[in-house]
Image 1 (tube, rainbow, N blue to C red):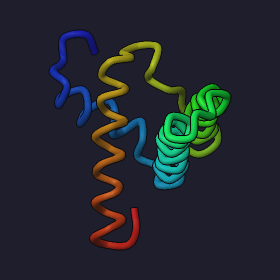
Image 2: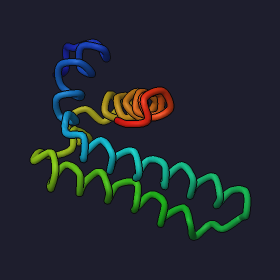
Image 3: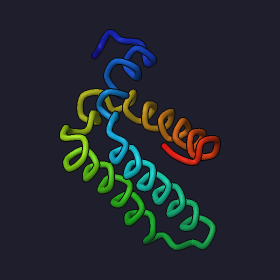
Image 4: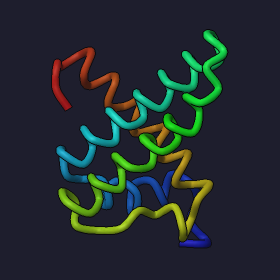
Length: 103
């Protein structure tokens, strides 16, 4: 995966590793809870919410990969592209949810 551009990685590696709809949903929920928790922690100065948000943000995708997708996260092999891929997929899933009402 080292010589791929981001979009090559995203289309040929990241999307197939996240093709299961249940895995995508649990990633979406985990990311939404993470973003919400971090935002609330800063607005309300609830600093203990930060580690909880991080924990949830990692736990739910881990469950998605292990129990629905049947694979492991790509974070260890390509962490930067993995975060970028998660961001793109999160945005694409919001778009699908808002335009089609489903993933």
